[in-house]
Figure (cartoon, rainbow, N blue to C red):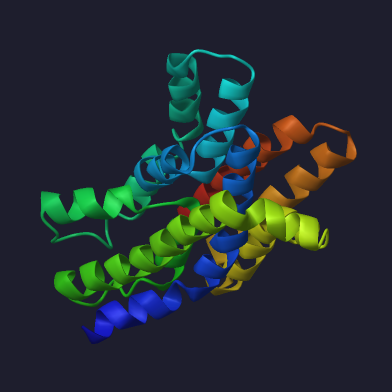
Length: 228
């Protein structure tokens, strides 16, 4: 139980970043005319921020639900990288435990787990820590969706300052998750390569390509640093 609580405590920075982003999703869904129960269902089952916002965008443009689902699948292909990267930390866990952990794995929980998961601990302790981490993040996402769908529009009307906070929350979250990873040389190389690539493309006005190119550059730098 103590390890579970430790994992839950480690989720606090993630939850703090998820809450405003989930509120933004609830507000956007409400503005699109979707009922609360459908937004809650999407957050509970899909549980993927970028995919959920893409779903709203494609449906508002009149796209078929199948097209929206295909877009969500493409956006989540990066999860095929996360699993193998955490495979050593998940050694000794059965398939049921791995399946449950896989559902709760997001960009942010992966970053936290990769940098802080105690690989030397027992399989049960690693499982409990990850479960605690993912429960905290999941509850924040569901709570934020509820808050945004039921009262987010009123919050924005009451104070326009909420809008820039919502927009900045997710980028700030990744900045807060970065320091624990910088203790490894290959992670420093990956972070530097990714940041420089993103800045260069952003400077050229290629915002759409910046994220993908930065990810590729970061992975390449980490691989080169590892094989040296």
